[in-house]
Length: 249
Image (cartoon, rainbow, N blue to C red):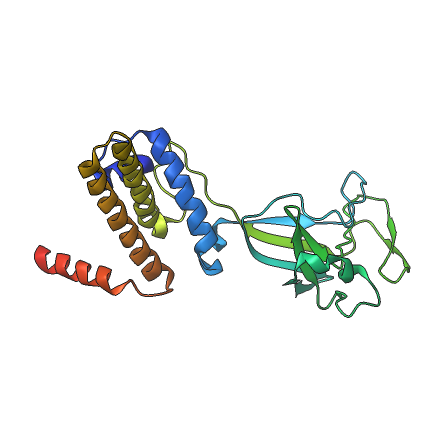
């Protein structure tokens, strides 16, 4: 069964795939933005920031090449040592490259900030990925530095992007949160049906779908909180669940 079909299986509706796929992708974005980092390592990607590309282009200070949805970790390799970078606000970006600034970043205590959909690591990574040419540049203090091929410090950005759902996918990549994503999409689909009924002035049907939307969202909230280990489910929802369990037994 395709994942969008599982939404219809949950709701009892017959909504089209093009509608539910969009709602599932909204659920994916919400979950990745909201989940604690420990749940996202399985879908994490990595980008390496260098000072000189393999083709010889000097890219010191250019920042990352990718826009990120959820940053998990940023660090610099100082030789073999992994130096974790602290995030700082971009409105002080000018100060991190000033040698006399008390905010100046150092190799032992690197920093990073987000600006224009990029990540900038300070001090700038200067790894030379070229096969043979050395990389000359001036450091923060105006001292001339030459980095041999294959030498220098790399910057590493580990990030998580929302898994993209299409009409052919049968299982969400974060399996333990699949049912939670289904509930989120079900809530949006019920809200859509309520809005359509309101437009058609069928207010009784609209009220029914609105109630179903709220129920799906409460169940989503309860399961999300329980699975992610954050807050407990709201007491009214817990009481409803207990009543349902007693009725079932």
